[in-house]
Amino acid sequence: LNEKYTSITRKGLALNEQVEQYVIELDKLNSIINGIEREMVFLKKRYEQAVETRNFTGIQLIDRNDELCILWEKSNVQEKLLKRGEDVMAQRDEDVRSLNVELSVVQHQLHVTLKRIPEVPKLREEVMRLQEQLTAVRKRAQQLSEELETPSSTMRKHRDLAGKDPDQETLRAKISFLEERLSDKKEALLEKELILE
Image 1 (tube, rainbow, N blue to C red):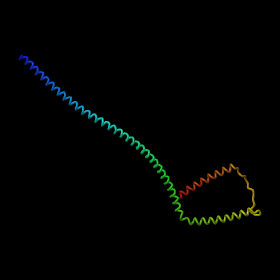
Image 2: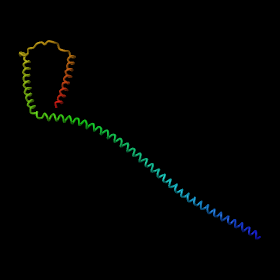
Image 3: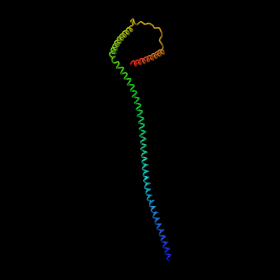
């Protein structure tokens, strides 16, 4: 009986030790589970933060994309304005060049006129002399006209001229030729005046 008791006691002790080991293992497993749960909670928080950061970054990216589109629009508008401004500047440069040419022509004319100012009294005298001559010639022409109109005048003598009158076509050709020649002479005269000035 003693031996049975001892055997049962040993078995009881062995079972107690085994139970204690199971309890220790269970504590270890609970500790591991608690650690894993804490880590899961931490990872869940980090995941939620990462999602929030991603969402915030996505919103910022959309905002930046909108800003970029607006900046592109402004850039295009600025380029169009710049091109229009360059065109206007080119036109203004052309206008300035044209006005400079006109200014040089006017200055040249002014210079020529100023050079002629000392000649004004002489020219006035010349004009008066020519007017007197013109008046005299008109009087003489009036006298001659009246004499020609008088049937008894000695000036009414006439004689037939030899030759024949050219036809209209020949006269037109002659007039055209003489007009061209007159135009050429005028141009040559202007060139000579410019050279003399």
